Length: 261
Image (tube, rainbow, N blue to C red; front, top):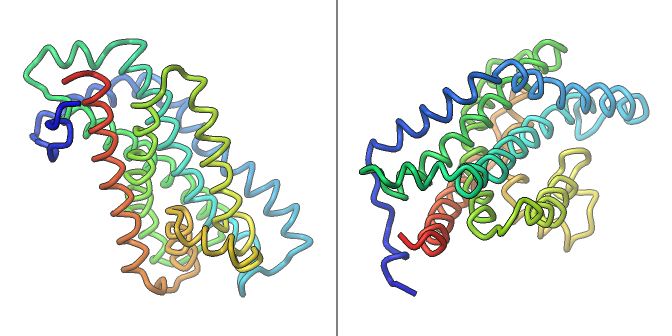
């Protein structure tokens, strides 16, 4: 194994045309994509919010609908970034060989991976903004602090984009991603307080939940939607940034090894 695969990223502004290329491709299906971003959270908010909300009128000092809204913002951004980094990223890298064509230009693999992370984060920003729009439409949040959920969605996207690209760099086929969703994404959704307070879990699972990035994202989003400043905001932000940086660097190392560049 060559030692240069562990070199720190060598970044340049050449990542932007790749991001722009992904945006132009997405623009052709933008309407369907936006509808998907809105439909998914509405199903959760209407189905679980009104269904369980009638049985559990209050959760953690707030209505169950607003409690669920905070988790749904983060869950939707996590899903959007993960799907883009996994399925779309794998298609561009392996099936369509778009990366191979780009690498025949002066653009480096470091720029390509950075553009993939930023594009997946952009998709998560769109998803988070769409969910926040639904929350405002339902009248669940009326505070200007909820606007901070928009940059939070971008940070969550960066976090899960890096993690998703690690799996993409290891994946031999699309089927491999089922393991990631079954063993990582779904358990994270259940353990990190999307649908119920983490305090309801056994102590060992609470400790595990505190190590997962989705928990820190929700601990930021839920107070913001309620109009309060999150407690230990610096810690939560630091954990998300650490996951984002580690995910990007590890995925870059794995892509360097896989593509032999």
